[in-house]
Image (cartoon, rainbow, N blue to C red; front, top):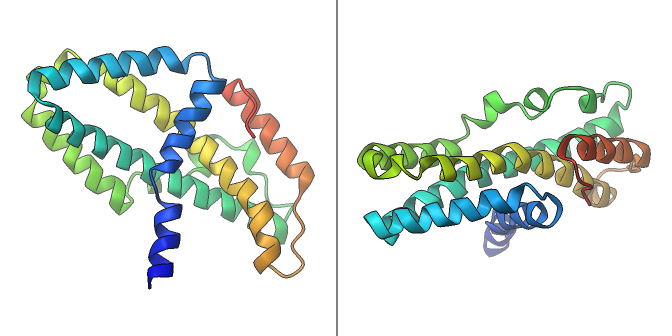
Length: 194
């Protein structure tokens, strides 16, 4: 069972959130100022209500983002496998992200729902203190909620290119589809994704 727990912890670790943040910092010039404003707001809020309380909020927000990223990566993996089995039907790059990321399902996943309960309780308890800082904090997490699943979906798709030859008889990655997807993502995000 240690092996199963090890694999699961690797696939669902906060390293995925850290990777999204690192890519946005390095590739998206609009992200660093949003992150700096967030950090300043989080520090100011911590000095007002206590670091431990703010850490609980931020941990819940990170879990919410992580849930979205893991789900999006899984869908990207599935999209790749689906493209292999039925390339004519795999036209997800022509759809809006909210459609092929199935946001209506993403928002109901158990880990996300649990994080949202914690966030809602925090907001209720600290609504007066939070009011002054909420815009900067929300802007940061909205940025991650919008860009993160797009990146994770692509990474799941690209991961499948490397993993599926191990487990799917006859699998051959579709280099053209992967390139088209990378180009579409570049157009949407404004930077190249590797």
